[in-house]
Length: 70
Image (cartoon, rainbow, N blue to C red; front, side):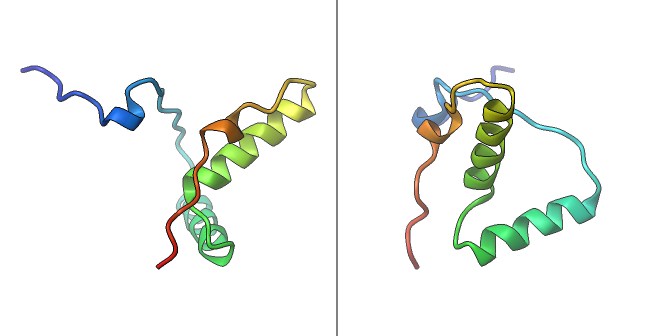
């Protein structure tokens, strides 16, 4: 069976994932809600902070986009 094609916005992207305790997931969701943001935005910010810590250019924010206001 053939895999479905990725959505056009994801066609050139790679997924990065990890396994964490449920409390981590819950805390991230709460931060996203409190900041009117998304998990994608929070993770991009965290990755950029990690890059900066190691003297690398901040490149993850280039992939971020604002969530539409409801």
